[in-house]
Length: 442
Image (cartoon, rainbow, N blue to C red; front, top):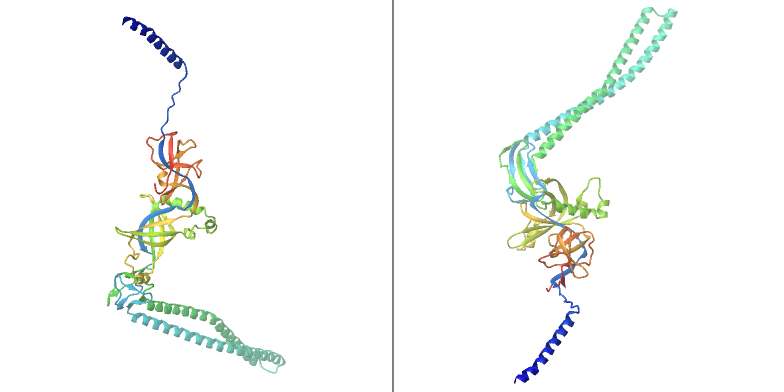
């Protein structure tokens, strides 16, 4: 038994020595352990170039573009009032609303007309007198010539002793008197133009009185200037109204405006897009006018259960900025046919009325822009993927956002670059990613 145990001892020692030799041989060689880096799965898309226009939004109240306030231009008693002249009623243009007693103004017109007739009569008399004086002057000129000839003959006869000196003196007096009469007629003829100018001035004054009397007479009748709605009435039948009194307030319901307040930054983007259009710039006059751009606008009325839309057009930009809110006013004009609205009889339709608080959306000029889905923006940064599928952070400037699409700008960006849509936590440059292209079904 002891002998068999002794036989196993050399074998065990030899085996142990062999294992140690093999282990030493292995330890002398370089062993490389590969570490596998984990990659984060993300959804990706691409930067695109699209023709997209900035859309700016603002809010404001609807107001009537054309408002008419009837102010009494004459004094008098209201002798007629249209039975439809009440707050809220619609009245067609040209309909008589109020009539003020015209008696005194008709009397003024008759008096002014009679005065003009008298002056015209004086003008006729002056013309006749001018003709009489002219003929008398011509006759006296001939008489003077004859008397002058007779006086010269008498001088010769007196020298010969044929007539006496007293006869010569008598002829001299006749000649002198004829000359005086001719001078008097000449003076009267010269006064005719001055007298006529005076009468013409009186005619002009009388005609002005007639025109004023006619105008006052016209002002006694007040008519509706357009198809519109009566907002306020301040006159009553048999009431005395004085000049300057407010009688009626009416609004034209066919043309309405919205003074939409919007941030100045959005308005600047809109103006910048217009400046890229050469046709608009070429059509500018000395004074800029945004109306030439023919910008369309959508007016939206929102309620708890529905939305109603109307189309409008941008007409002008208000010249003042609200310093408290930092907003500027953009005026949008809309046409509305109340009669057509009534004929449609659509229960889901709604009229656009003064006083409504609405949203206004204005589209600028479409320009080629680098765009990304809105969810690709992470605090104004893009997560780009390089050729090695590693994350690169890129700061960008967001030009505007429209329909979940962001127009962006940054140095070095170009269409086709891969961008990460998913959120990454933590985020760092060089992070290994496993991209999957985003599709709608995902």
